[in-house]
Image (spheres, rainbow, N blue to C red):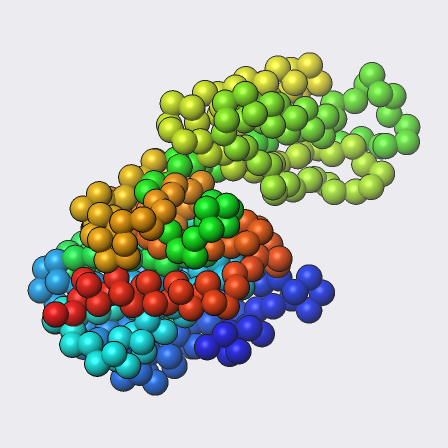
Length: 401
Ligand code: HGY
Ligand code: MN
Ligand code: MN
């Protein structure tokens, strides 16, 4: 499976992945998913929001009684220059776990589905987990229609160009009602398992997190002829805001990142008229996150005033804290052994979105460096194999007699 996925959407220079929603690379990943499903005799379907499903023991979700399905999967899209594992490890492991269970001769007493949720990273349209948010009713069709990529292409236009009917998108409670348990396996995006010496862990919670767009409006002018005192340079206010974000996060034990920026007119010899920066901020609890975000905004306002800059701040997304369901989490611990480590994470996941609607759990596989959202992201083959066996044990415990 890895050999087929490896070249898809990989940049020849950086060796990172650029698998953005509804692009050619994404279509190739989707074709791979469909082929994996069909090769295993699973019933394949795409839901109204473009998420892919492969069913064992049902032809479509409508065949499944309420709360009966056990579902596992993750996503195949990537951040800009992402690693091989964030997302795909969960999908590959799902198919491999099914193969393992068939090898064991396991008898399924509940329908099983393997999923690929669309547009988890939000690399193209700016909002993460679009596929699961739409399905769970946490993103309306109207709001989704407003999403645009950097070239001005709207989400519905991109969907249509890729052959998906954008008119169909929206909440899908009928489908979610069928799910009794959703388990997402994911590469760990930190070093907790490496430090504890464990191959596999169980998720406890996801930090609340969000994305804010900062627009610093100044005045374009000549870089050679404009006296420093006459400038309204938005880059200065932006730069001081980046430093303030670091300070606020440090004080609160949180994280805050300006990882994306756009500059107008973007000329070497022009003072910018506009600097637009995107803040990603996360903390262990919402009160702390509020405090950090408010602190950064206040600092940005002060720096903007001092440099004669007009500042606009827009919250583009917010995901509240997720505490995974204790009953399912405890069941996983019973299946995998009570000594399996239980850990929290600052990364967002479709499982976090779905947890508001269905019982949800996550498994993490050791990442020896903790690096993620980078071409250097890595997991060792024997740890991945341990992840597959753990997922197979969990699925057997949940879906087999
Ligand atoms: O950004 C995140 O935490 C996730 O990987 N989408
Ligand atoms: Mn990610
Ligand atoms: Mn992921």
